Image (tube, rainbow, N blue to C red; front, side):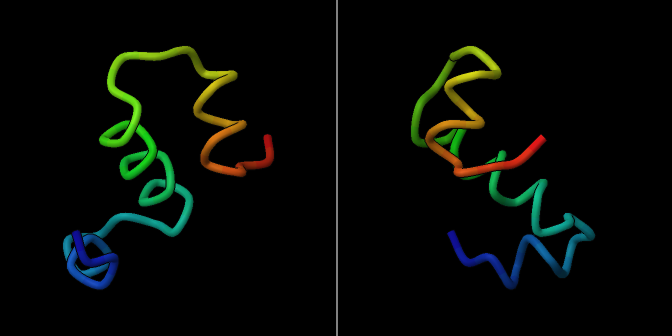
Length: 41
């Protein structure tokens, strides 16, 4: 999925990272999303 399309519909960079990580992993924990998505909290 193109990030530019997600930006066009109003998602922030952080939201895009979370969304794409969830698509990759499926149902998971927040810790795993942070780890795999390389997010900072």
